[in-house]
Length: 145
Image 1: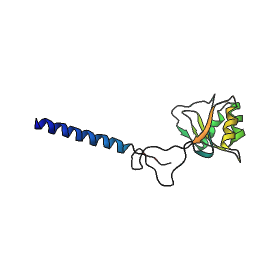
Image 2 (image 1 turned 90 degrees about the vertical axis):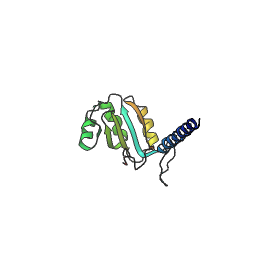
Image 3 (image 1 turned 60 degrees about the horizontal axis):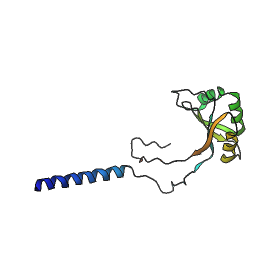
Image 4 (image 1 turned 90 degrees about the horizontal axis):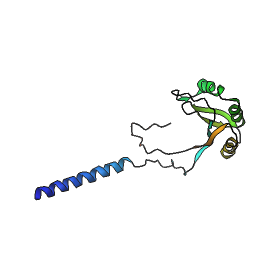
């Protein structure tokens, strides 16, 4: 009887330690001054996907000349919509056909998104939202950009 009690107590302690360890691994890591409100976005940037964007699987994120080449292949209505709002295309995710665009001059994110959403060539447009990951800086999967 005493041995059964000992086994049950050991199993409960093991389970408690296991559950506590799982909870610790999921804790959100933040640094002081690193807070931003829910729904915050990068000022002056939008993400846009055009309806007829030529998706290029396996090419990943494009910058520079590769991004310029991707933009040349956009249909004319998409290039015209982009010319109205963009100062610079920062990145292109060729796998998904999504462009990260820096806005021109004093154009606000809200007005740019509204203008893009009214254009039939645009599949969707949204602010470049900020988000926080749950990975800790000492996690091997953590990448600071």
